[in-house]
Amino acid sequence: VRELIAAGKTWKSYAESLPAAGYTGPDAPPYLKHHNPFAYFSDVLNNSAQASNLVPFGQLLADFANNQVPNYSFIAPNTQDDAHDCPGGASTCSDSQKLSAADQWLQTNIGKVLQSSAFQTDGLLIIVFDESDISDMNHGGGHVAMVLLSPKAKAGFQSTTFYQHQSTLRATLEALGIASLPGAAAGATDMGEFFK
Image (cartoon, rainbow, N blue to C red; front, side, top):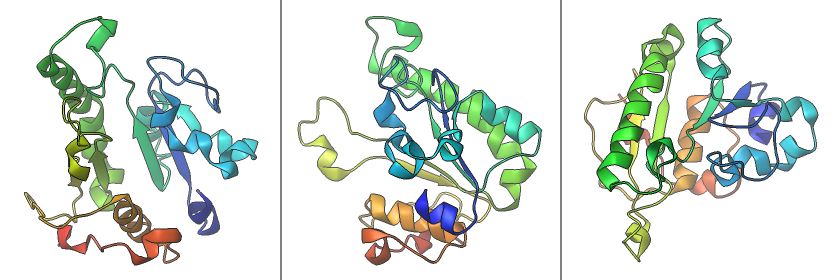
């Protein structure tokens, strides 16, 4: 957030099932605070104007429809739609049911974003999982799925390069035209191979 503010960029975190705009409180299932990192940042916690950028997910499509899309958007589905918990609050379900619900959520919600003129111009959507298979006690060996969608991305490109979150931060800031790369992002592996 600090780099976005310093560069004069706008931002919002759209979290599904967030109890209210500006909410920085504890988990309110199926919303999980730790899936919304902006709720922890001191630049957000100590500034009510910045905290107001934490909004319920439903605001996303309204912002696109009203051409009020921020420069940077973070989207966090709730645990029933992110393949973590059973859809609809069911107590048991299969992994394929969880994945099917997440896939349906992406098709229903993110498809509209991809079709928008705001995205088609120069948008970048990064879909990343925060963990590997639950039965994998090595946590995927650091491997999680990530998909980059952009009119500027190479179609169907797959990389064998090992990237970490710092590279994602670097790619995000560079896509926004921000040259100041904080912390380990400054020395992180460049993700330029994904783009035309």
